[in-house]
Length: 367
Image (cartoon, rainbow, N blue to C red; front, side, top):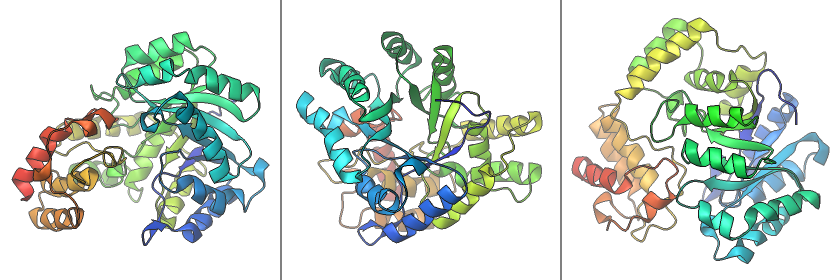
């Protein structure tokens, strides 16, 4: 694998456009076509992204030559019953996508709370065997843990081809996410980095007003998402910067950012430093909307949507919109006050958020 001086855009297939209860495959296909036509090739999905692998088959695999793109997917031990069940995910992913092989295959969302499953079930050996068999071309892992754990894993598995890390300017010095420290560990081990959450679940596309004013003054007309993407793509050793695009407008904006890419200069970095100071004072719940907490919630609380509603009040001081968004988030589902404190959400959260505590706060301000 080679590293270009400036990282290419990757199409993250986690937040695809929706039509009714499912994915809008027609719009996704148009986005795929535009992405490939612009010269970009990296697509990222996962076994646990609901409907995403099938959408990749319909919008990408069945419509374009296999050599014209690279496809990544992931094995998630958290949703497996045992080692055999975990290993079966590769067969299922190959069947769902029809891709024949995966260019990049990842052990998914490793962190201190789940790494034992990957070790005990022999999944490191499994992916190496699958690479030798030609079913995957490169193997790596996505990571949401501490720098110490990342250092241990890369020391124990020096043949890892790449690491996928959450990196964005808001989390660069966040003590819970440790973006900057994890990036430094990966590079110290000589590993290429795939960047996920560069726009932090979309929140950096609509940052607080004070941040918008900073960006508007520095680069009038530039989208707020472009600042986040350029921050990530200006780092060294980056294989791809994943953007979970949900409509054609987002695709067009991201393609504009990466076509004729302009890396950040000292003036841009100074603006980012001021934006980081603003965000450090923000009252917003730092949820990226990944949804990993939702499936196992016994009270059926749609936690990311509840948090997004609360942020309308906490970060934007708009209680009317907050109440309206909360009514939509809880329509036919659990309310924040229904939380029983079982903790499954906190075990699943890659941001390591005190979800139970935040749900109590949401109940206070929204109910």
